[in-house]
Length: 119
Length: 111
Image 1: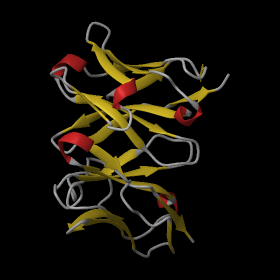
Image 2 (image 1 turned 45 degrees about the vertical axis):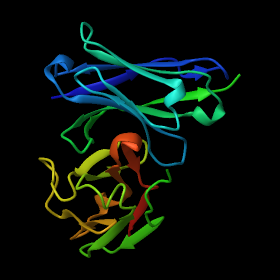
Image 3 (image 1 turned 90 degrees about the vertical axis):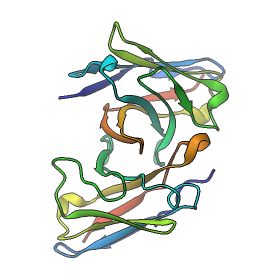
Image 4 (image 1 turned 135 degrees about the vertical axis):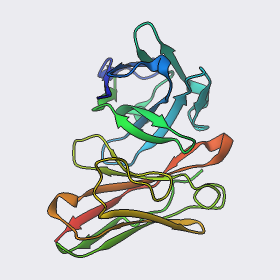
């Protein structure tokens, strides 16, 4: 069974960089599939942040592209998210997920981790 | 790019059917057969219910079905059960710039 688990600081100061890691178990990242990050501000809807293909190609939301980097570490079977210059608007539950097929559907999700941006 | 448009809330009684709509544009919902639907219970991660407009992942009851007409996709839940009460989000591929766009979410209440 594929499982994903997010980890990282729960509190980040404004203007600093948010860094999260998603550990994947039950499936080898290097075997294929694509991997993404989605966030959900408290009480609001889902927002796609970006994804990384098995080829290493990355795709980002246009609204976040200038601040986002997604990378993969196949040796640790994990992938990561970095979001720079954060503000209170970046406070959200951050989910990592696996996508499949050409339609970018996300079939396995982590439990989510709340990141609060505050001084 | 604005989120796909969903009704804020829908409701139905046990055993009834409800349909949740998801309206986009020809650049997303209307342009590709890549609409997916997610169910989210409070405090939980979203769960994939429908992908590629009308395909169900293994384990999803056949009470859940998806369809699309023009720029509007729909999720229909038949034989409503109490455990179906949740938030539902549609999602569409939106081409090689936007890539992925979600709807604003619909709260389903089982009366």
